[in-house]
Length: 483
Image (cartoon, rainbow, N blue to C red):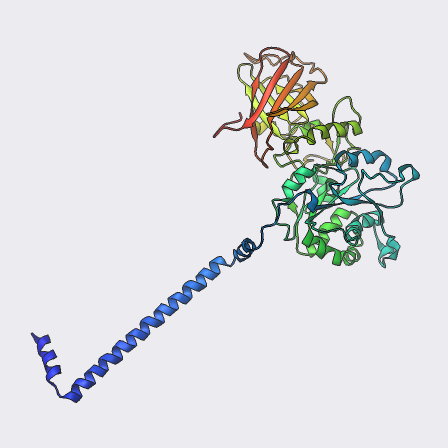
């Protein structure tokens, strides 16, 4: 009732009073509208700023999506910068020949001097030969600690100055006794953005080698890869860096320091192998990491890879498997025959082990220490990985079979492995265990399709009591336990 009275009073008040009240209401409404507009504008601005902040890390990715899609990295995008010596070429030539693909792989090999007449004219089946520039032109020459390593290092700069780098995305460096598995190299490097600065390789297998040089450097014998933007930045400063670090002895160490000063550190990849080991490395090769095999090195300091072969012959032999399927090279697959208490472990393209006991993968992935460290003496630990000892226990020691032949079939690939020497032990005495001595050959069937990246494959075994066993590699089942 009072509200009706007030409204009546307003409506019945003199005109001037009514006008004043309406003006007041208009002012209040106007202020309210301005307030809400300001609040709305502030919220929109805040939301936009939040959206910008949340997307700031994806701007480069979004820009890349708008760019024309480029072709995937392939072998033609790799430039190999190899270094050698006329003095050692006679014994090392075979290693380079084993993996180089004439008219397919790109690169050059740099020597200290022209090779002897024995190797002239230079074979077109090899990478083009270049002779390094004379270091004496460098002002720092008298102070250089290791002039040969400086020559090797400058090969990157000299290769760049040849202006052969059209469409090159990566430089890959290596020695004349390095063996590269180039299909796997392409697979590994394709996982990185080649438009960014990357330094990819691996340190030594031995702790002392890394301690004496650096844990943060890629060892050059096993090779390393530099993305092309990093190469472009490096060559501008390479000679300056040599002056800055003229007292450094090892070229690999020098490289890591120069790249660190450019703001780039090493990205580790376990497929690169310096092989800073001595003696029999069969235990090392039989239990490789799941990373694709990219390189092997130091063939002249280890025993031949296969029994009853010389060093060159063993390298040619392992490449027979590599030329068919590099994705599975040395990749370990493990399966069990429960009825016999046997464990089979295949290192594809290299060896098969049979144990007269059930072992889990966690145990068999450790290399058998058939080898010795690069640096002799001192107390363990010696290696950058765990090992297991050579055993004379018949339940621990494997029967060894080595790669013999490979056949491509319609539905897959068949590799054969033969026993090269008897185990000369009694059988494992556990109840129910059966001796594997009658076996002389293992045949392994693998799919025709490449093995994806670091994926572990499982297997099944067929054995009917004769001298041959058959293994079939396959994808592991969901939640399958390899034990």
